[in-house]
Image (cartoon, rainbow, N blue to C red; front, side, top):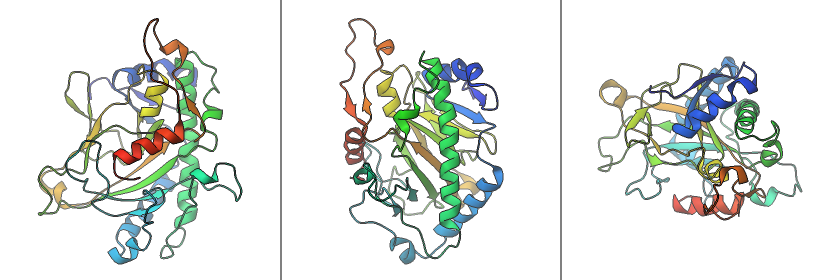
Length: 307
């Protein structure tokens, strides 16, 4: 798998910072193991996700929030489309976001979560997984901070009460009537700060390298594929790359079975100003203008049909 770094989060962040940073700079991706997400929690969450997507379509659609941009609850097949793509992705998903107390100053930018009544323990399982993803993401960000010459805790305030979203994804067996050119997830870049992905062991996830070649990303069981999102790319003026990636259709037996995964899209606070770091801007170079994280998110969601 080329030289995409495989990083153990059990090591001190000072020891992994530059290895992680180099992989993000070259590929936009790294494989992360020995993270803070217990395997028994992963197993429970995967079972719960499969049980939800097995519910009747009419039940699932009852949790689709019209006009909600897919931010919470269920998004049916054929809704999301990658930027500049001609056809919609072959997937359905459920979103869990941050639960804010009533009256929180950021509540206007984050809708309350909704939970399916049909599955006991669904809420408890995924709130626990959300917290575990946050803990792991914070450790990755600490390493990135050191790589960029910042204080180890630099990102803490930028993501505190951030608009992070956990997605439960179901790619169904490939339908015979799929539109020409449709794949499970068309080539795209992630909008957010970093993405932590569970469930990428099965073949299909690919990144586009600097040479224009599609490279498979296949972490070992239980490990995470972690990639740079557009917000971190913008903050670092492209020094850490938000790499185009996709999930291609399988062939043979794999085409006749479902694929499941759980990405966690770690976001900045909605009111965080994304302003390129001075050390990432060369003399005379024109950097992107500052923009609030929420404004950038809404701009990008409109491009993919979710706002």
